[in-house]
Each structure stands twice: as structure tokens, then as C-alpha cells.
Length: 121
Image 1: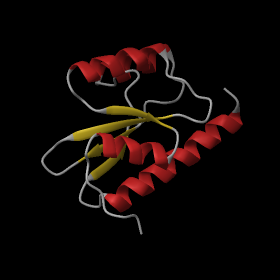
Image 2: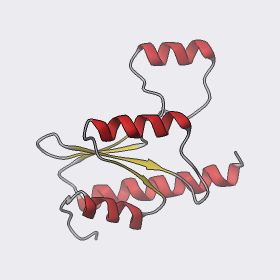
Image 3: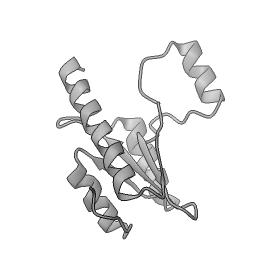
Image 4: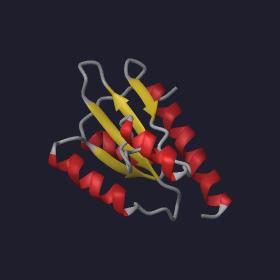
């Protein structure tokens, strides 16, 4: 992966976090730090502790406990095979997940899921 693409994805990611906090201040907005390269030993420990390979980057948890998940990708990013399998499993158990590349994509997903938002300041 080229560094420029990673920086672009990071910029998208931080803007989505800020957007979700602005439009749903009553919700929990969180990042799951699954990215990065780990040694086989460190990866094994992380998985034993509950890390799920391919888990989406951002979670939005509403009052009452309903959660919505976003996998952030840069302009040319694609899901890994692990992410594809996990997204299919999440769909099977009715956990909403969307691949997003912009705030517009997040807005579209929230509309599709009928999640009410306030207008961003």
C-alpha cells in the first residue's frame, strides 16, 4: 500500500468520526484498532483476547444498544477476503455494516438504516 493512500483513508476516517459525533451526540462513536502489522505472536495474542480479523473501523452505538458499523476505505481501497466474509456474517445476524469512502456515503447508509440525525453544525 502506498503511504499517500493510507493518509487519505486516515483523513476520511477522522472526518467521519467528527461527523458522527456532531450528528449523533447522544451516541457512542468508536474506532476499532484492527489495522497495522503484527508479528504472528502478537496477532495470536490479540485474537485470543477477542480481536476479530476484518472487523469494521468505526462503530456507532445508539442509546438502547443498536449498533451500526462502517468500514472506511480510501478512493481505491477494496475489502480484504476476511472483511468480505465478516460482512457477510454480520449481514446474516442483522448487524448493519457499510463500506464508506466519504461523509456522503455515511449519510446514505444512515438514511438506508433509518437512523435519525441532527444537522451537522
